[in-house]
Image 1 (cartoon, rainbow, N blue to C red):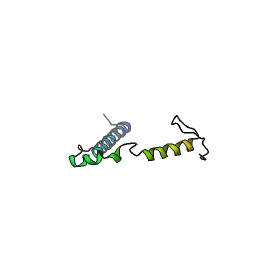
Image 2 (image 1 turned 135 degrees about the vertical axis):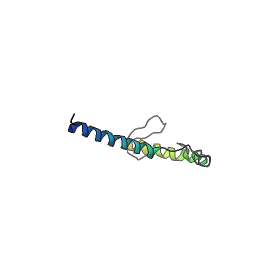
Image 3 (image 1 turned 90 degrees about the horizontal axis):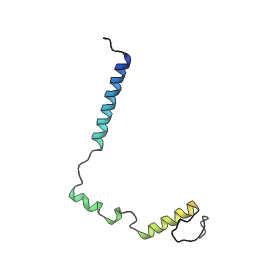
Image 4 (image 1 turned 45 degrees about the vertical axis):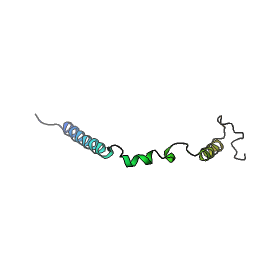
Length: 82
């Protein structure tokens, strides 16, 4: 039986997709975190909201940019004049 163009095209695309999937899976795999790397992950700076002053400044900028206050107890409008 003669192969059609569609079958050959499908096989090439399937092989290309398989090769891409294998390359992608090989590129993003990583072993577990080593013991000497865990000290950096447990560092206080890696935690979200570790600096209260920075969090307050971010909220102030966000409220001025958005033009509204969202229940954080601060007064003022969105004009940036407070």
